[in-house]
Length: 366
Image (cartoon, rainbow, N blue to C red; front, side, top):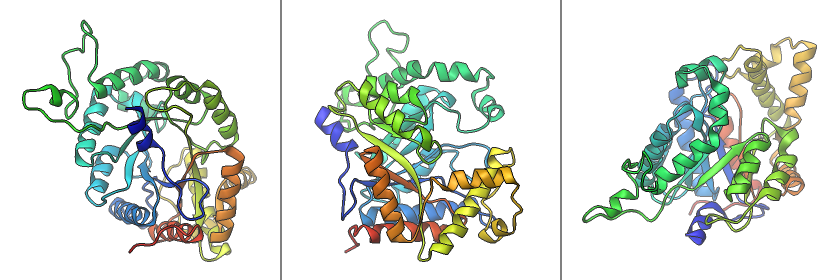
């Protein structure tokens, strides 16, 4: 089991990339565009990523954000599974406290049946939204309780996925279907795969837990860059070999945008930063156009935020982005880089992944 699980987790680097490259899609919706446009772009990016040797494609759970159409990762992943053949697909992540563990086990068991051996289950403990929306999702205002219960919820979810609640447990006769119980039924045959669990984080809690459980760990460098190295160090220090991994495996999410022209890259990331300004000040909306961002009158505080935010976005020409990614990987020791391209237009995002693939000499379609 350990070798099979590790093979599904560890990717292979292609071309001159120092580590495997993957994609994190926020399914962003730009001003003047629709969610349908964003989802079509997602399919285009997944197909491009598959054809160029990116290892995996994840979508993240967000709620009540007009500019992010990824509130239902499992639904999006089912759509992507129907339009791809080889690339790994997964959640980066599902926010476990928002859901009953049995529901997640059923959803990802279904995805595994749709795309055997290609599904990742990345889990986070944050709500993926504001407190009021989280309360509406959970039908409770005890949000801290949900986060504090994360280890227990994780253990429950794992047992549902493995169908191994012990005798006497209240859930012993409850089974997540599709799942292992089908192999034990008369005439039953079940896939040998089950989605590997990843823990996601932006601080030390999940880093330590992932290490203690011997699970792979994904860190949100793209919005918590100051905590990246400490969290990865904590994960590696806490790591205990498991049936899943015999050594630590780390992935970091990185905001990266390549354009044919350096000036255009600055225009695009300014628009994405304005979107973050609005989100952080309680005014979430669609991703603005570069023209709107250039005309926007940033206050000194907003300008300081933009400069700080964009300092952690690897952007510019393909060569500049490649150099920036290489330096980041060397500094963090990450085993995999998961790139997220935040821009107003889907064509810009798609082009960015193409340019990065070219810069690293990734395989080209036959």
